[in-house]
Length: 150
Image 1: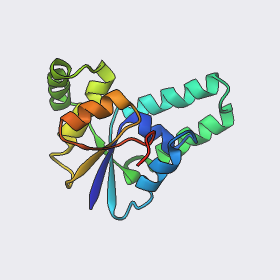
Image 2: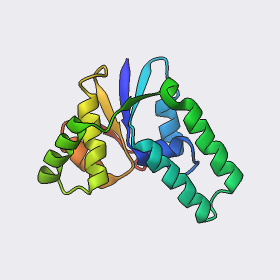
Image 3: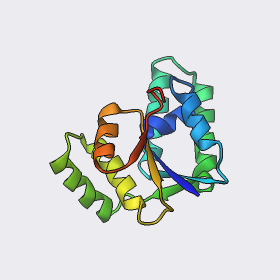
């Protein structure tokens, strides 16, 4: 079984059609042979992204509500949820000392590193943020960026 850690920049592409959504959907479609892992704050970050798209006029209120309801329904059935715990916080602090990351980026990468202890290897880091992808590669992850060819 393969494991894929989705940071929020990739996770949102499963629910909101945008550039890179097709690649993210192809990664997530075989849920019987793959495990999708997210940090628990992704629930809040995804809600924020959807509501921002609504405020920007990209999606209407009914579609935003439907997307959020679908994500809530998917919940633990679709994802392994990595808690934001002391181990993640400690790892994020280490990453901030080592890489040019922002707080949320460090938390996401730390969540992936900590999740590796409890999900089957190999774990691929799925992310649409090129700077975060570079840090994940330096930490030894195979990175899948839906915004890039290949």
